[in-house]
Length: 110
Image 1 (cartoon, rainbow, N blue to C red):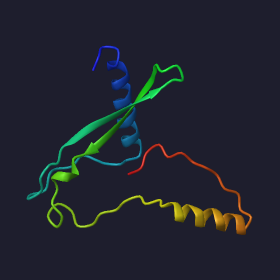
Image 2 (image 1 turned 30 degrees about the vertical axis):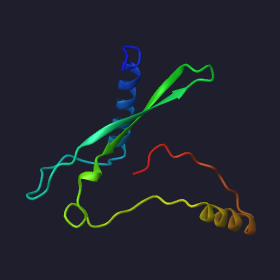
Image 3 (image 1 turned 90 degrees about the vertical axis):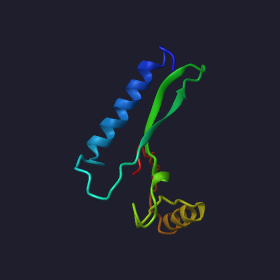
Image 4 (image 1 turned 60 degrees about the vertical axis):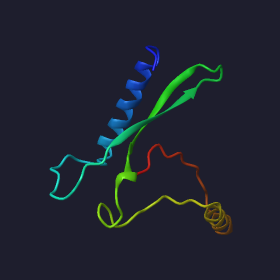
């Protein structure tokens, strides 16, 4: 990390943390007996301007879930699954019933 990138990274971290807190994604609690703490890491991605200079960094806080054991640390798993066939079905239904469709960019999924 260069001294030039440091303010961008701090801004990315602040933005991600503000979003997590405002969405009430998590809350602090005491660790229950028999549970273990899993770590986390920050993933950063550069957003570039058309001239190739850095516009901003996007930060994402990621849990190190690979350290968990199924049946011990968790029992169910969920994933966002948007296969192209499902999108085609939705567009077909919207067309058939003459419904308006809107595109939406999702800033955060959890």
